[in-house]
Every structure is written in C-alpha cells, then in structure tokens.
Image (cartoon, rainbow, N blue to C red; front, side):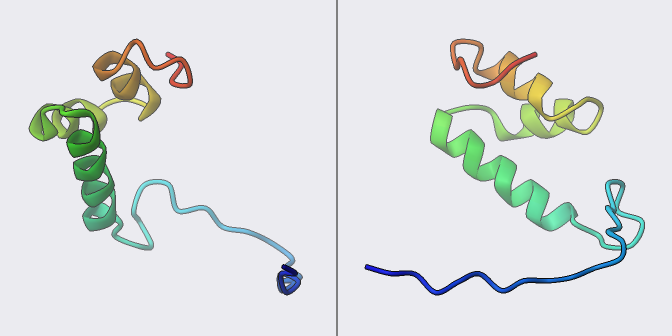
Length: 72
C-alpha cells in the first residue's frame, strides 16, 4: 500500500509557545494527563499537582519508575 507524500511546508521561522502566552493549551494538556493517569491507574490530581512545577518527564518517571522509556 502506498502513502501519499507528506506536504512540504517552507517557513522562515518557527515560534514555539511553551508557556501558553499565545495559545492556552491547558485543556488539551489536562486531557493528555487524564489519559495517561487512566492508562496506568494513577492519581490524576497528583499528576496535575506535580506536572505544573517541573518538566513533564520528571512526574512521569516518578509515577511510573519501572517504565524504562521515561528518564529523570
């Protein structure tokens, strides 16, 4: 089965909005954390409490330390 070629986008610059200044991504971030918590049987509120004050990989590793793909 062949796949169509991905469209090519030529840009002069890329802007990353990592703090929500331009786009409020709170709803989608919380949805992803909810799915993560449900998938691994974790406390969603605890994840939200810890994920807002550190890099996301840190709470992931702390909540699921046996997961080798999540590094501290």
